[in-house]
Image (cartoon, rainbow, N blue to C red; front, side, top):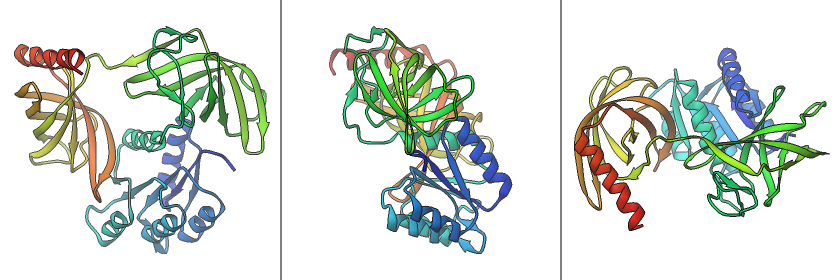
Length: 342
């Protein structure tokens, strides 16, 4: 049995192929079933890292599958898919505990972002040290890759998700599913940290076959760099944004502010926006050093679905157009205060 995997319960053949293929592009193994009986058999055989569940399945309700999953594995992450905004099934599912709710038709990138977030959410056991743009043997800098964490390994032939087993200043061990030989001599290792995407080339020192996969021993490079990061630093804020947008949300609505930068804002909404949609924002932000009130336009670049106290929520990253100079200066001052008075 694969160590890392997703169980997809979906009776629409086209949708299950689209979803399973999309998950495999990010290295996540996916098994699919189309009815309650098959799902029960799979859940009895092993514990999955994530359950992806349609509420309307053949001859049954997805709520019955969710109930069985919760009885066996109370803390298993669950993403529910539904075509109906409010039904008894949705209410029952939320009452049983759902980590994210997606409405059909959903954006595949929103699904993948949500899957990544749920898979990477875990309690660290110990840290593997690697500094950003720092010699690998320095043991200083950002602690971004932890034992038990998930990381993606890429080569010309494979993309596979692995779990970090151990690491020190020179070596990293990662367990993956079984791969057919010939095995790669080098892997491109990718890890999404809190602040950026990290990527480095690692030489394979050893590949040990095990009962449920392969344990890779990788030689860490002397230099590890961030290959992608935000252009501007984020400042945590509180407050509200009055949002109007084209697409699914035909009316203006309120959103909660999470953080703010010169180039973007993170919002939490009660209804899913459309990726790529243009938003008209009236922002009222509050920070310890004062208030920021302004209007702006932006484009939705990323969405992650989640639930809060049994209610669906959607965290949207919005790229803002050019802000007024006075607001930019205020944001820079807030960031300076954080650095000088943490």
